Length: 108
Image (tube, rainbow, N blue to C red; front, top):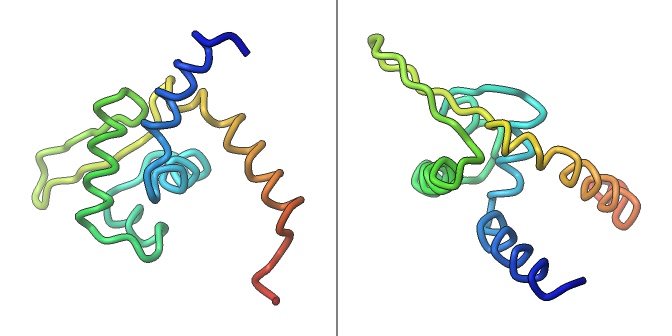
């Protein structure tokens, strides 16, 4: 792989490799747009603070979009942007790889 591609890959991996980040992307990819509370329930074990940090970071780099409705109470939802949807194929490939490597370890 050419060095310029390695630098681009390193940048992408640095952006999306934080704890919980890939799982958040997976949940949004498989469920579509979600409100914060729904997303929090799906990403079991994550704190609201960390979920907020990850969503803000993903929004800053253009992978997730945030929509806000000024209702009472306010409704905020998150979904993958077109750029974020480009990660679908690699996410599914990683899922398939994980299944091959680890199978269903929940029964062990």
